[in-house]
Image (tube, rainbow, N blue to C red; front, side, top):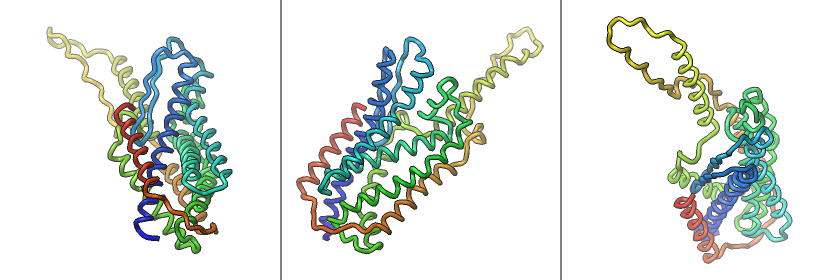
Amino acid sequence: MSLHRVWLLDVALLALMILASRLALVLHEVGGHAVPAKALGATALEVRLSPLGGGCVSPTFPRPVGPTGTVIFDLGGIAINLLTGAAAWICARRIASRGLDYVALLFLGVGSTAGAIVYLACGLYYGSGDPVGFAPRTEDISHLQWAWILFLPAAAAVGWFGPRHFLDFLAGHLQTDTARRRLLAVGATVGLAGLVYFGLWLALRDPKIEGSTRAWRIEREITRETIARVKEQAAKPPPPPTTPAPAPPPAPIVVRAEDVADRIPPPIGPLVLYATFALAGIAAIVRTRPGSGTAAVRPAVAGGLAFLATLAVALFRFFG
């Protein structure tokens, strides 16, 4: 296959990757958080969506929603992504052809389920993010940190079947008759598209909207330490006056990230999780024996998908 045809294929895959991830984000934030928040009686609602990353929903409840409401609001996004991801994946496998429509559903399915698994595992590991809904009364899930290990088999399954099913599409565009050719073909297509996506995300990332479970854990620990220091300062008796002048106000309390760094677990869990995805994916690529074909992506189709993806990023950028 010529480089021109590979380039068209990569453009189409990158566009579908962007469109699938934006749809998964809307389903997570709007369908999984905003809609339940309104159903629970939220009077005000702020939804923020980043161009290529995550988002956040900030509701205002006039009265406490209770433990059940907290569970529904906190875990709704992950639940929606798991359900819609599984549905998209099943629908993709039921399509007789292995064209771009198949890849679009596969990207939505694999991306949604993998993202939910990562969020659950890392959230439990660091004790932050939406998984705090597992402890709705206290939002302290430190006692559940061990549970991240339970998601490693699911990560291995997604890492195995995702590339394996993608090769059913790729075999119609590139030679995949040997393990070496399959690895090169995946790297030159979805691998390269993923790297470009990551670069675009870095360039457009808005820290005010998106973060990570580790960063949220650090913020939580800073808040806890600040409260503890304020209480400690208030409990100290004031020094005896030595002059008639009024005592100076207490120094402001500033807690830095390095002050609580020893409370944050090292990133062993996330690294093991990502390695599980990667190793399972490589094993699937090496062992899969897909068929063959002579399909090609037309320039008009690649250009149209690129336009839609660019439009989606622009809309999320200016209105998200």
